[in-house]
Figure 1 (cartoon, helix red, strand yellow):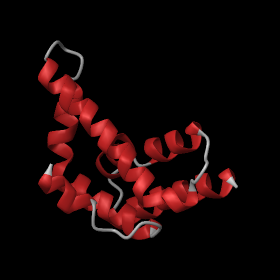
Figure 2: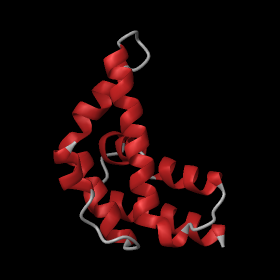
Figure 3: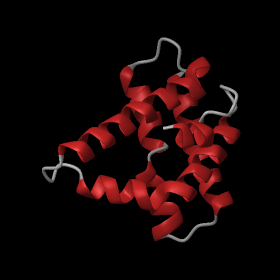
Amino acid sequence: AKRIDSQRWNTEPGNIESAISELIEHYEAESTLILNLLEQTNKGESFINSLTEQGRIYHRKWVERCFGQYILNSRVDTIDALAVSTDIYIYKLLRLDLKRSKKSTVNVISRIVRGILKEKK
């Protein structure tokens, strides 16, 4: 938890590009572990299920912290959209499957996040 906090909790809230860049650096460092845990979720191991659930809760809190000033009084689906658009599976698709650069991955996810925030208004 402390390592993840050090990777994801440094960005000043409201700085979209910095938040996404920080997130991608976290995924660069931890994606193998996270994706392996997610693959094992719901296969009977309660410890792994607990870890992945904690990860989902943590990610949602990260979204609320980073984008909170933009999503005050937002509908739940706006927060859901931000959580989904910054989820590790989007990183996996762009960075690992499509072999996009880190910069391109940051740019694409930032565009999605900005679109969600603009649509919310």
